Image (cartoon, rainbow over all chains, first blue to last red; front, top):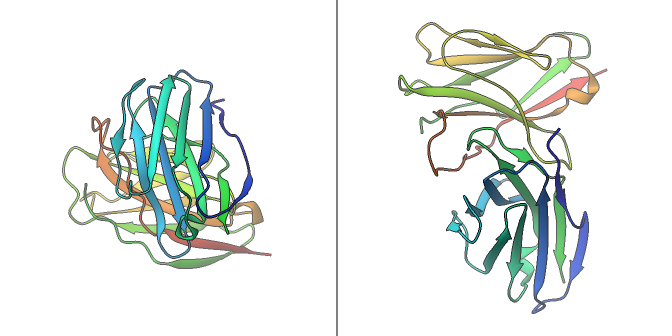
Length: 111
Length: 112
């Protein structure tokens, strides 16, 4: 089975801190994605990547950046965390863009 | 991608079949219907997909109407663990570099 591992299940950070969310997949998938999920708003795509060192903006990239130095790892970076970035962050990977495998999510609280 | 419409919520008695509808009246000929579900505090999980024929796997069955304007996901014997939000998504297979877009889905509550 595909395994997508997110480094932390729960994270608490202070406003202004630089935050790294890590995601690792073990199936040699080309595609990786970062979504955030908020009550009433559903899943929204932040960034995605179709290859190493390649990235594309999703629907809500503002305040975020990403890094994909190796195929198996896709990092989401909050350069200066703000309270409106408190959310559930979900990483996914796929071989084909329709069949995604998601991690368990990181619940980030920014105080 | 074609737009989908799902009821916001549904209830189902444990052990009974759960039938989750999805309308996709603007679906085009090369678009598939995909279903995902998201159990509370977990990431979404792929369930099944189909083009025009009915499909079945170990998790569920997918029934697509002949005109392809609507479909139904069937969980034949719902259990409490099937309580989740179910997402219906319509798009062409392997649509290049176009990520999946998740709507609001249907919140299914399985009741003991």
